[in-house]
Image (cartoon, rainbow, N blue to C red; front, top):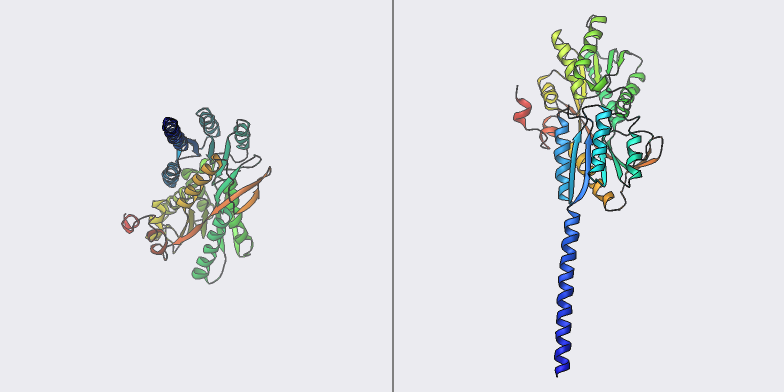
Length: 348
């Protein structure tokens, strides 16, 4: 009986130790899961949309157990390099990056990979670097949608597709600016009645520089420009400011297309100052990027939509949707999906 009692006591102690050890192990694993360090660096906070990118990404990453280090680079590649190095020093396991200079950012990816850190491209595909994954919108489709909307506008206004067009491009050499512009250029080149009178890149995607370009083009052509296609919302605002000074900020007179769906531009669409805006849905983009970052941090494989070659490797790529927004579909798109309220859009 004594031996049986002793045996039962030993078993009880061992069981208690096992349960205690399991609980401690589970607690440690849980703590570690909540401390997956993720870097998120945007090229700028200049555009209104980037406040949404930041908020949505952080919320999603934290819900999946991540700790996010966020920063932006004010469209300066040297500043971005310093911020990137700082994230490496903080122990980020994965860095999600929207590059300032898509042509040189590959060097940062190589640096990270040498330290065992994975890099996810965000929004703009960098070239000549070993990206581990890419989350982006179809920038070429953005330009194509803008061009197609311009063609329809010209048909309605003139009964034919002819007129003078200015293409207002973003940062020189930026892969997104190139892709958006190429989508628009395809439409322009396929319509012989269209004359491309300006095709100008703008350092830092500057609204002020875009306004100066628009002023020069309007002066050169005695205000006889039919359409401005702009790579982003900020530059479209610059164009509209130039048009406004000439009494031309009216969709009955000049077609203007932007991209990013900043609130002011959506208000311009509602007011009849701007013809169309491309809504790049931020939540799917930022949430997907956060999910990919956590997946890579756990050592798991990313499920991609396609493989895109960036001049160095085939990059597993996930593409999120873009939507053309006009005065006719504002309520069924931007407002219906809660991106802005009707009160915000209608505010003066």
